[in-house]
Image (cartoon, rainbow, N blue to C red; front, top):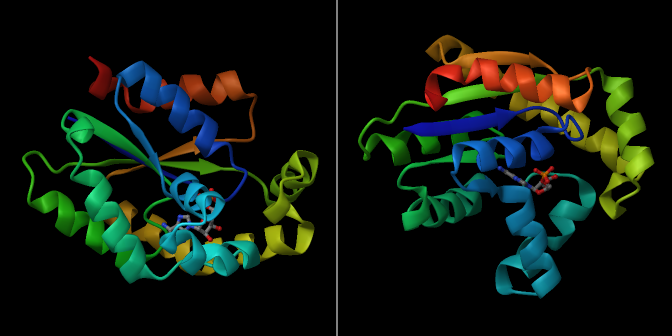
Length: 187
Ligand code: AMP
């Protein structure tokens, strides 16, 4: 079973890495940020509820995210595994995920944490120039990461499922390290 969670600050490259690994392992990648941005773009009920939160760089509330993830993980394409990109972002979300998976066979996870220096992250955001990547929003997203998501890293570290990846290197090197880190899964 290939169940992988990517953790890392905004602009750590985890989205790109998650996509690449998903192709290799032939499992779907579930990006909660993408799902939310698509909802905003479509102007759906969910989109209207989360639009301002996304624009401010804050987190959507755990209850709404739990509902979203429960529904997505119940889809048949996740039967042979999945990669989560952007979830969980709080300890409450991590507990929800444990609970959702506990109902399934072989609920083990591998959690990959991508480490990148803070100033490099801000620079990457400015280079990319997406709407919510304005510098003050970017700094807010980094602050929220430190406050809410860093404890998730500890949560998984204590569970013994955390693997750290140096994300300061070129994309290809990072991909290579990730493949080694999940090596046991692809054999
Ligand atoms: P991302 O593309 O993963 O950086 O997500 C973009 C934005 O969507 C975040 O800044 C949050 O506002 C929201 N978001 C995505 N995933 C979550 C989550 N697991 N919990 C709360 N908010 C989220």
